[in-house]
Image 1 (cartoon, rainbow, N blue to C red):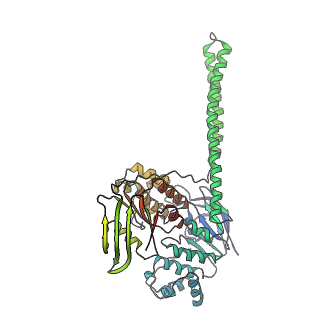
Image 2 (spheres, rainbow, N blue to C red):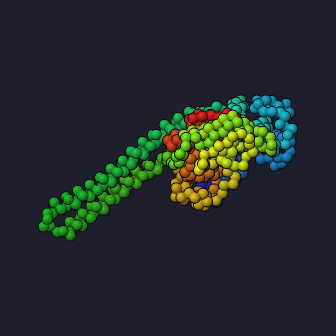
Length: 487
């Protein structure tokens, strides 16, 4: 057992006027299976990189273990996977690697293939197996479930349950619940450590948020009462002075006295209001979320798209088949299946892309589709530029980003310079701002924080758009999908 001690940690990026962490202190036991949670842009990945010593900071981080970051940067992916893994953990025995791969239900044959040829799921399993075999290593696991199908997520979750000691960033609620016993939450102004699983932490947080909201409402009422009382005091002071000296008295004196009383009342009011506002400012850890909006178009026909006996091909090789699929108004269809089975290819066919296929494909005339790709690598530019390029009113797009948790500063930065989560939110906001008959989303929740996932779920339930989507978050699919198509 070892203790990681963080004391007085302060860090900010040169490109930003705001600090990410300000005088933060907490302790972490290396035997804990710890989940690191917080909204996008709060500094989860930044904290992992600070632990790895990649950035300069003030304060101190002390530990007797080596920090290892996942996903590990593979410099030469043309090498066989086994050689890549031995570069990570040169002292491991091959039988140990075999055991880890067995626990992960990974194919040992993949060791003898080039690392570049592996699927995202295979890469995740291979890297985790070697990183956990590194001597004196404490693993910092950043978003391991991105692009993993549900079955692979279960394999990785079961694997992590057997381990004692890691720090995990993930936004998959079911995944977190199954494999952590402590939670570190990054809030607006501090970091809090709790001994609990994710559901326990979320329940506690929601209870605390409700208490903070009630407290804020009381403070708002108090400030309202203070303002009303100050106005009454001023009116009473003037009335008292006027009755004391009568209507024939020295009007100048009365005015002078009333002005003094008014000034005194305002001074008292300002002191009381300042005290109330300082109390309100203590509400630093509540993540209040505004409701999102979506305005889907109504299609004239009940059926939007129809497929029958469809086979999809890649380089003349058949990758999947669909016996029958009809997309009707109000459907929210989840496309399920393992990585590589053709889910993304099917979505691209539905969008009208040039995909090689056989069978009957019928798409309604005039159908307007909003497509959200899983790939955000090409998204760049200022939010105002993205809005203009997509014919979206700038004010509407900016409002959507603010509701999704963008700071005012981030609204004037190139989205490609932001965190993966914020960049994905920009892509998601672009789709939400488009009025369409059909929304086709390919893994929309990759990198998206939990509170925003709940926002999006609530939005879809209320607006009830017609959707076809691929998503591996079991909670999201269970709450949103009206149908499931298994490939």
